[in-house]
Image (tube, rainbow, N blue to C red; front, top):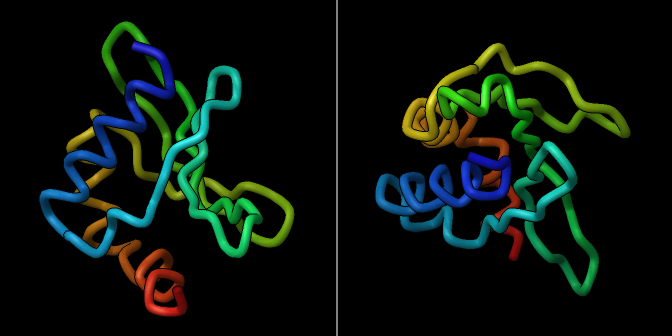
Length: 100
């Protein structure tokens, strides 16, 4: 499974857990996919999904911090990553969704 397919599975699961998350979108970037949103025509990246093991559908979730990506220490199948986004990392994207 490629990073874009994985990210789309994460977004579908997240939308079923938290309807406000539908503003998040995925953009493929080689072996990674970036989750973020459009703000007045500009792309705002929030999270990055990096292939950890494509054969097992496992990926690492990274968080945008300034101009660099930091590890979140969340790794797993799409449902696990979506659960983390709906739980411990909810405030990171929810704040942005309330501004828009």
